[in-house]
Image (tube, rainbow over all chains, first blue to last red; front, side, top):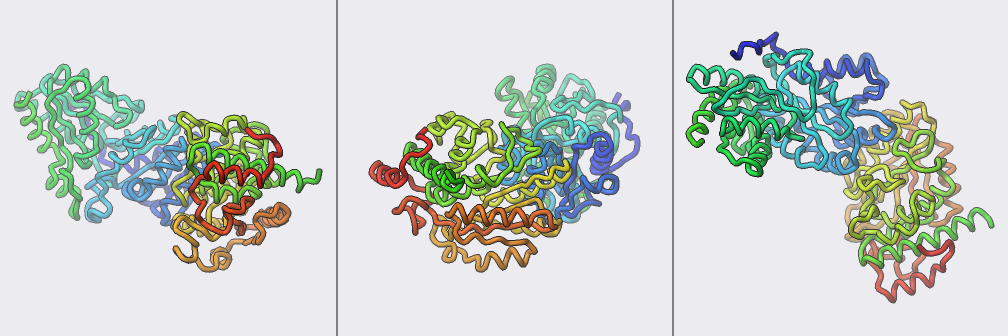
Amino acid sequence: MIKKYINTGSKDTRSGFGAGMTELGQKNEHVVALCADLIGSLKFDDFKKNHPERFFQIGIAEANMIGIAAGLTVGGKIPFTGTFANFSTGRVYDQIRQSVAYSDKNVKICASHAGLTLGEDGATHQILEDIGMMKMLPGMTVINTCDYNQTKAATIALAEHHGPAYLRFGRPVVPNFTPADEPFIIGKAIMLHEGTDVTIIATGHLVWEALIAAETLEAKGISAEVINIHTIKPLDEEAILKSVAKTGCVVTAEEHNILGGLGESVARTLALNNPKPQEFVAVQDSFGESGTPEQLMDKYKLNHQAIVEAVEKVIIRR
Amino acid sequence: MSEIKRLEDFTTQVRRDILRMVHAVNSGHPGGSLGCAEFLVTLYQSIMTRKEGFDMNGIGEDIFFLSNGHISPVFYSVLARSGYFSVSELATFRKLDTRLQGHPTTHEGLPGIRMASGSLGQGLSVALGATQAKKLNQDQHLVYVLTGDGELQEGQNWEAIMYASAKKVDNLIAIVDYNGQQIDGATKDVLNMGNLKAKFEAFDWDVVEITEGNSIEAILTGMNDAKSKTGHGKPVCVLLHTEMGNGVDFMMHTHAWHGKAPSDEQLANALAQNPETLGDY
C-alpha cells in the first residue's frame, strides 16, 4: 500500500533548492541570491552563472548578508540568502529578528546542512535548534522539506509568497519520492497514507522514514496514517486535528531538538483542541557529534525503527 | 529669508519637538537627537532628492536609513515636519498603540521609515542592500545611512565597511554621528576606536570630515562635497563631529542626557533657549 511512493532516484534536498533557484532566475527578474562563501554547498552555481548581476557573494559575513538582503527588498527585490542552517539562524538571530522579521521584509532565508545529517563536521555545524528559533519570530513562515522535488517546489513557491520565510533542507542524498508536479502549498499538510490506529506527523528527512515505519507497522497489524508537514509555521492544524480525531494518538518525527520543534507545535495544537497521547521522535535536548549521517540518525534514534517503537509506545497510552 | 536661516528656524522647532516628546513620556534619548538635529533637517530639507508621499521601495528618489534608532525623536520630528505624517502625531511618541515606537519601526506603517532600528550595528548592511537594489533598478539616486560612533563597536559594521569598498559601492553615503559619547561615557574611555578616519581610509573609503557638525553651513558644504564623491567607485563616509545635546546649554558637554528626559523646570529652561518658530505640535 505504501508502494505508490517510489524513490525515483535519491538526491540531496539542497540540489532541489539549486534547481528551484535556477528556475526562479529564469522566471522572476526580481529574485536575487546572496551567499556567504558556500556557492557549491548551496548549489548556487547555475544561478550565479546565468545571472551574475543578481548574485551577491557576501563573503564569510552572515550578519552583513542578512542586512543586505533586507535592504534589497527596499527597491522591490526578492532576496534568497543561502548558507548552512547554523549560520542562517543562530549566528544571525538578531539581524533576522530586527532587520527582516520586525521590519516585515520579504527575505527568504534558505538553509542547507540542517540537523545531524550534516555528518562528520560535527556539532558546531549541526544545528538542531533552528526551527524553534525561527518559528518563534512573529510573521515568519517556517518550511522544512523532505526531498529533492519538494525542496525545488518550495523554493519556487516562496518567490510568490510575500513575507519573511525560513526554508530548511539538508546535505545528504535521500530518496526522492514526492511527485515532481505536486503543487507546493505553503501551510498545507500532505496526507501520504491513510490509517486508523495512529497518526505519524513527520517533517524533512523523517518523512521517508515514516513511510517505511508505516509499512513495518502494517505488517504488525497497526494501521498508521502518515502526514507530511513541510510547513511548520503556519501549521496545518486542521489536517492534524482531523487525523488525530480518527486515530486518537500521534507520533511526531523530526531531525531537530525535541524542544522547539514540530513536535511541540503539534502538542500545543492538541492541548488546545483535543488532548491525546503523543510521542516525540526527535533529538533529546543534546548537541550532535561527528559520524556518518546513518550512524548519527541511528544513535540519536531518528529513523524508521525509532518511529515504530514510538508508535508501539503511544498506542498503549491511547 | 536665507536658506540657512530657514533651516536654522526649522532646527529650533525640531529641538522643541524633541524636548517636548521626551519630556511628555519621561523617557527617550534627547542628547543624540539634539546633536543630529541640524544634520537631519539639512539632509531632508536640502540635501536629499525626495518624491512627494512615501512608498517603501523609494525608486527614483534618495533614501535614508537611521541605524542608531534611539535618536528616534529627531527622526520623527524631521519626518513629520517634512510632510510624511501629521505633526500632531508627535504627541503619541512612545505611548500605547502609537506608530511612533520608542525605536523606529516599519511594523506600524509609519510613513518615512524603511527599516526597524534600535539593536545597533545593522543599518549599514541594510543600506548596502538598498544601494544594490538601486543599481539593479538603474536608479541613479543615493542611499544615506546614519550610524552612531559608539555603534561602530558592533562588528557587523566592519563586515559592511569591508563589503562596500570591495564591491565598489559608490551610491552610498554613510554618516557617522561623531559625538565621542556613549552610554557609559566617552567612547575613548569605553572602547577607544582610535582614528576613525584612518580606519575608513584603510578600508578604502572616501572620507569627508565635517568638523562643525552642528553648523548648517558646514553640513551643506560637507554633504555637497560627499555627494560629489559618489559615482567614482568608492563608498563615501562622512565623519560628522557633533555635540550631544546641542542647542540646550545644560545638555551639552556631557553624556548624561543620552537616555534621560528633562524635568518640568529643565524643559521650561530648554524651551526658553529655543523659541517657537514653525509652531508647536
